[in-house]
Image 1 (cartoon, rainbow, N blue to C red):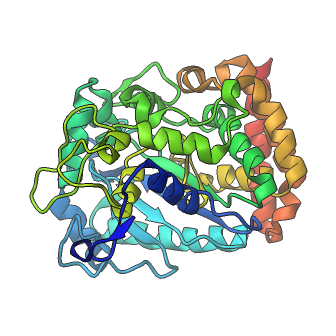
Image 2 (image 1 turned 45 degrees about the vertical axis):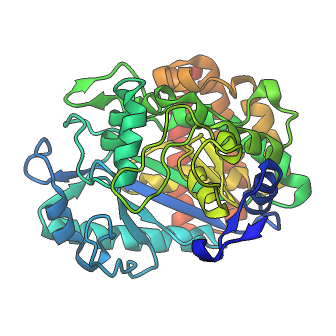
Image 3 (image 1 turned 180 degrees about the vertical axis):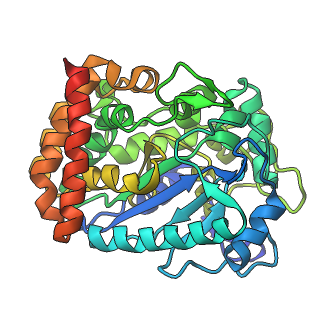
Length: 411
């Protein structure tokens, strides 16, 4: 490896071994599992007519100094009062990324305060947040255009309309968990994947899109699964459960085709099929840097993505305050090694049923059975989160309601 002053002291990756070393350093940062984070994404609608298009300028005016620079290049992009940052996705979806906290209660209270502030900003502009994981009224249409988004659309269009549906119509809920101590990494990595299908099924909200029923419990996840398996399929699977997480992610990342390569101009597109490994081997006119590799990782969208922590990306957006329920369920399932181990065992038999979960939700009986067991485990571990009494009781009741629904599916 050499240092290049022309690249602002970013390290040039001379070969695949250098890339593998960089990935091993940044993607799985071990230590005591103490922090939990959350990212909330919503579609945005006109309060009087949810079928009406909401353009970029209207979002810019509503968000004001909190606008991201993709919407207003002159914006200071100020955080919300409790530290959440606002982004706007290509279809005009608005997202809050909350700062990770050691207390789940503090995370919920801060994020809810930021969500309330965001709602007030939108309300003043005659806008409201959506309540589902897929825009139930409008067909896909771009709102924010950037070189990244244009390159993304070109790549996804090669495989059909799912890419545009994902980019312009979907809204998700992401939960972020620490990787854990070195001896815990493999089990937490496996469990984060395994509980995905039953929890996707249990919290699916995306059965309508563009004014019609889709035939899917989660059309949002259906869109993700249809885009490009090389960048959206799960990294872990039951059939390859013995793979070292770092090695599995490294192989996945280097074999994934490039979505784009950043440039000073408006065109960031790359030749079709060129992988990051190909770039390392000289496929493009300059060698990649560590910064290029980091950016490439941001264009990979598996259900669980390692970013130093584990980013769980498989949940649909939830209505109102209900995002607190899957957050608490996941935090409880990963609150101690014994519960995580039991969760992995309970979800193991359905750990590869991503498509069935997206299609049928809890109507798929094995998924309903696993979800009910996971809810039982979460209820037992919920006291470990040290939630205030009122919040604990609210979430306990909500989990029990979800468990009752899963139990009906199980029968």
